[in-house]
Image (cartoon, rainbow, N blue to C red):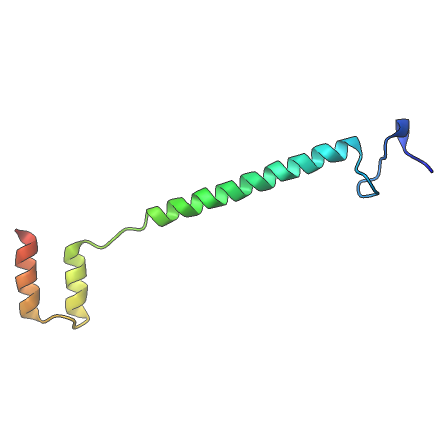
Length: 82
């Protein structure tokens, strides 16, 4: 059986990887791990930066949607301004 140069297996996917193949597998594992960590950190950051509406904006949306009357809006607006 031919074992390649100096007795090391030279095939990329032929049985056991060569000595250089181990470095390739380790490198791929490091790159994949880094990508997963990056995606997790980026998603967590984007979730935290969601802006919430101010109380006045919520009050205006409730008036627009018909959840409260104009009189209730004026009363609640006066409370918020205090």
